[in-house]
Length: 341
Ligand SMILES: O=CC(=O)O
View 1 (cartoon, rainbow, N blue to C red):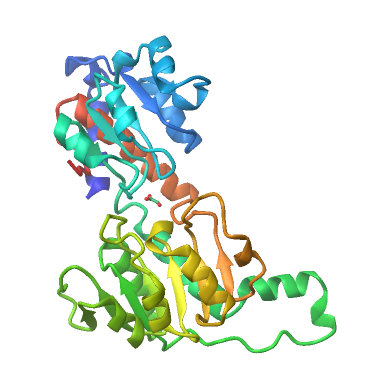
View 2 (cartoon, rainbow, N blue to C red):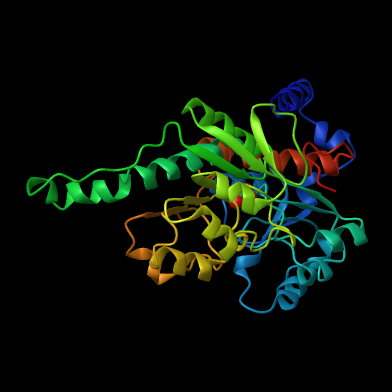
């Protein structure tokens, strides 16, 4: 859908290179604030099309920065999973009209404040779904087949002394998914191709006859061998993976988290892994990024990634294009491509 719109936009622009001016708006004078370094291509695109302000160039307080950088001309914020738009930032930007997030997750944006002030919000769904789902499968294989541990085994020359030992099979395992949205469904499809049975926990039952629905996450964790967190982070889903869920998954169970660190009670996760109450974990996200609990670093049954679910060249470019398209649509008074509010 995004591609069609993109193609239509390009055609219109090709037909009329002055489109931006003709719609009565000089985009170049619109102030856009980027909250932290993200993707170089996005930064270049923002610099080309708008008047870009970079918050990380701020040595003083946000208020000081905005005073010296004409904060009142800033009409858009581009944030990400690290720094979004909290109440303080929103309050310091009197002309803010839109937050276009370079992320699908919205947990770093004060949505209530945006709604209250009539500020639009857009994110980058769909374009990153495949990459995040691919990484979830990669983490499962990484943990069960010991890919990182066996790679290290070869590199440090241990293979010459002895075989690596036996790993655990993935194909045919039972997979439980917390949150069957776009990403959860993409993971389910991939796991199905590995001959896995799929069950899920979600706010409501979805129209997938061959996936078993659980309205209780403990029952889901009890019934599956691999539990994957793929839901959005909200007040309801914070620490959804607690001690009870971890114990229901059990000493042979594997936890995969490609959602947000705060979905999991990390202290409980660490002690379950250290005490052998959980079989292993594949994690892309943590409660206090970029800090990862020390105890996890020495565990061979854990695979750690530095929050890179959507970080491929292809997807990062597509996310950047979507951010730019949303901003251009907003300032041309057209519908947002991927509106949240
Ligand atoms: O974590 C990644 C995202 O929300 O896009």
